[in-house]
Length: 315
Image (cartoon, rainbow, N blue to C red; front, side):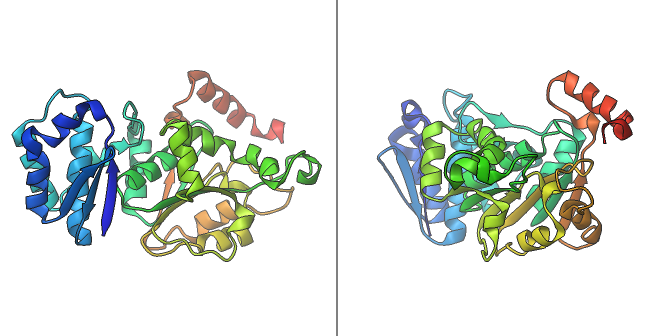
């Protein structure tokens, strides 16, 4: 197995490598991997488990250098010991480390923490809740963090392209231009977690893929994080089709607001149906966020409360 890790800050290269490349030599000796540094990146190769542990240590060192001027020997020794024992502290699990050095995503409140824990601890996670609770954002952040830590190889972002009063065929442009408005929230979350050039490169190499739900039929996705956003707009048939795309070493996250749907009146929501059918299935987790978990502008919470109190008036 071989993994290449970009050096986040080339000006801190000497601090990362240590005097006379001492840090790299210690990591190489501890895990018995081949380790080379060239062209602004560190390449680690060897047995899969050893490479993953060495990668974990290098990533932790880079994170430490975001706030520290140099690395203490005790820090490196602790990181190596923890990786050798294959232990991850609760604090490390709580931090969703993304690609922008200045950004670290941390769940806010017990609801979001339970959601993040569910994603990291289960292969299939459902999250239901009102607008502004971070359902999509945390799903994307957790997936990006897993990608950065080399626990998955790709991210697939999926949304139903439900027509809200207009036919897609009447919209201008080719198919990609027609569906882009439906996928925009997923792009927005990604732009908060990596540079434009990096996102563009990942999408060109199919490391990150953003697709309409209808295009998922017939696929099996291994070593991936697969997110279905706005799932309340999927039919039961579409939901079954999506859920059966889950492959080996993958995580699937399904988010939606079961209090609203853009499906035709009388059409059942596949999201609501799945919440009932899968509530007792081993390996699947269901998290429900409430208006207390809203993290957008404080006014959003008050808007949600008013509309919830007068739900019958707006139907």
